Image (tube, rainbow, N blue to C red):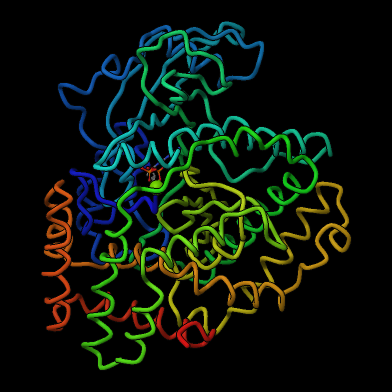
Length: 488
Ligand SMILES: Nc1ncnc2c1ncn2[C@@H]1O[C@H](COP(=O)(O)OP(=O)(O)O)[C@@H](O)[C@H]1O
Ligand SMILES: [Mg+2]
């Protein structure tokens, strides 16, 4: 769900972009390793994994004919291109991508009109990690294909019909398959020719884009790009909901079953209580204890992801630093500035309260000091971009979205915070846990072992053995909850 449960091969302490920019990127690995202690936002190097003997495209049903299909669907209509060769290798999975495995597919083709050989790189995303069944129950794989192939397609059409450039913060989908009622459908919702295929997404590889060090978090320069991009996404989702609601019915039909054992969830929050108790914050611990039960989580979830709210937009649902990539420009002084952004990982997108995305992004990916100093500015960037996007879609913001103001957004943030902070905290807890704590939780697939592991971890944390970074981050979140009156 939060996309933050480590797969077996994840090495969370390392920070590496996963751009996988071809074999040339492999030579960056050594530099990336040396630099990883002191990486600033936007300075991650790229790295690819080494192909392994069993890393054959056929293993995932990728035949030469299918590669030709990827190409035909990806290139503009009417092109005449023929696949000449392709290579397949894993994207190094270092600390993220916990619900999928990703491969790079490099395709060399001949453009028969231009009589030229060209190369295109795709990222192939396949189910993987420890929670494939849960992801399927929660509709994650299906939802992502539907989002890319249908919802983003509606955005594209809305923008085109207004004569607007189609500048969407998403990679383009070349091909996708989803499992629906035991059958494999392609991204258009048609029965896939080969029913032996599994779920698969084939996306344009975002060459030239990088991920930011998730432990450092965003600086103001990045937030200035992130919030407007989020606002534009929300605004398009708002128009979709208000004016073309039936075009989102396929998204609504994606199966969504809560994992049956949510007791694990409340349990996983016990360590925060331990930190608060260790820090002597007993009244805060008592308040957190009240609001972190599994029931409270379900309530909050149901209140956030419903279409029965005053303001409903599409909500990305997992919009944190690890699910965004940036392109940079370098100014005269050699300083790099982010100038373009892409959102990844549309697995949890649904209609709901836009404040969720803001809260989740802020708490997981920025520091409290930055928010304290600039929070209203940040919200004003969001409001301005939302407004511009509505105008670009031919709408009158004052009529279609009379609620849109910084003050209103501020209160929406405060209201949603008490429901939404828990999901962000889970990500933070995972991100800043020590290797020892993580392996306690994830060393076993056995559900029975989890309560014991959490008990041991809680005891360690009560004894002050939580990482100092995590203590600081938890206290920052608690501080924010207090400011908004969520711990009363
Ligand atoms: N289209 C893409 N181009 C380049 N890198 C990508 C692309 N898609 C994913 N990645 C890399 O893979 C990582 C995980 O991808 P994501 O879609 O978030 O998978 P998951 O759903 O498993 O979290 C991203 O953080 C990014 O580094
Ligand atoms: Mg992800």
